[in-house]
Amino acid sequence: MPRATGTFTVDGWDPQPYDTAEGATLTCVHVTKTFDGDLTGTSTTDIITAVSQAETSAAYAGFERFTGTVHGRKGTFVLHHTATQHAEESALSWTVLPGSGTGELLGIRGGGGIVNDGGVHSFHLDYELD
Image (cartoon, rainbow, N blue to C red; front, side):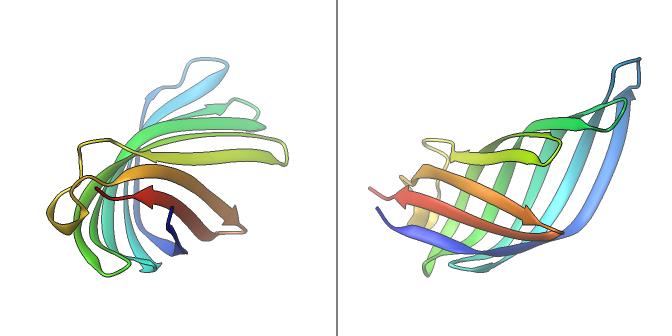
């Protein structure tokens, strides 16, 4: 199974809190990114975040549409995100939505992870193509 690696930058972060009740704040966030490395392109992401009132833990889930190339093959696909963080521990993963690939990425499937190291975002995506 091929592995794509690289980095991305967050170009836009537009949070819209919708529930600020005691315990945690729930927010819809629209994110735009630029990818470099084995994935080259841009994406738009919509996530729902939950941040504890004390800001000691957080989680999010959402969907991202990537447009660009994977190891030189051009197209689009959708990623499903899930993440949790508590204290110094975090887990961020993404999975390709089966059937969402277009162009030369038709039939792409797989998953991977994201690492946020002090604001520097790196990723890996293990994938297969039909």
